[in-house]
Amino acid sequence: MTSGLLVCVTSYMFGSYDFRFFSKPSGYIGVYDPAEIHNRNQLKGYMQEAMVKLGYHLVFFFVYLYSTIIRLVDD
Image: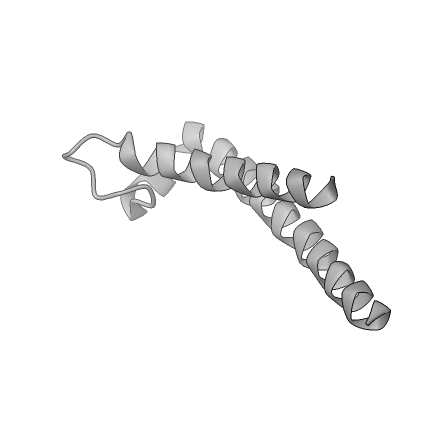
């Protein structure tokens, strides 16, 4: 049950990144264009996205660490 949930959330995060990467027009440098950081109207969205990704990585680091420790202790 929990491993299925972990796979679903992880695949959603990778899928959303892939969508952003492949939906950029051909004239753009990429997802992380250094010149776009100076647009104040987009900066709030970039900061919010960075905090969501940071939270995701922190939570799932400890979830996977806990799962690994429990699996090792049970053996």
